Amino acid sequence: MTEHWCISDYHFYHKKLRLKYRLQWDSDDEMNEVMIQNTNELVKRNDFLYFIGDFTWRNHGIKILERLNGQIFFIYGNHDKKTIINKLKNYKNIIWHGEQKGIKIYGQKIFLNHYLMVSWNCCHWGSWHIHGHHHNPVPEEFYTGKVMNVGVDINDYKPINFGQVKDYMKTRPDNWNLIRKKYKEK
Image 1 (cartoon, rainbow, N blue to C red):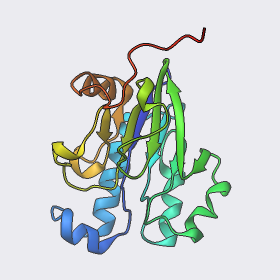
Image 2 (cartoon, rainbow, N blue to C red):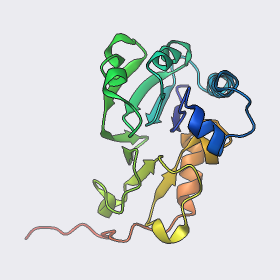
Image 3 (spheres, one colour):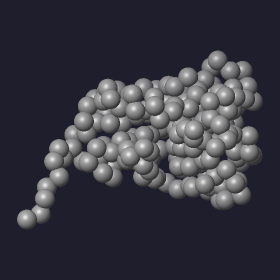
Image 4 (tube, rainbow, N blue to C red):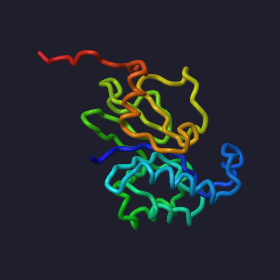
């Protein structure tokens, strides 16, 4: 069965970020290999991988895409340079790329954007928001509703599957602007 996975903020080859947040690794290559291995142990070739921004700091890091399992939806982050974005079309495992995307998994609407948002498409009808960008847990007072950070730094450097997202969203309060009943026109 095809599974759906989410992850953000790999930051392959980003030495300054590694020295600030990822001190357990002695080199960029070591960090990169662990994250590639963690991803491929979970994500199978036919699975969908929703990558939510900040893939690599160096242009040659884009070649890591060839090594990752899954059919990838690639959301741009603030560290994804134009030179990298322009090369995405050359990778057959990239099935979509852009700044944000609304998707539906097993009937659940989900809005993907690299940045944490207060309001997103269909949030008032119960859609969820999945983001990255923050390398530490976001303080609860900044979260409104069904929101989840799938950044590698707070998720053991592994992708999160849809079942884990669903379980987490059950613990979240309803969206602040949720409409409980659809209004019928007279």
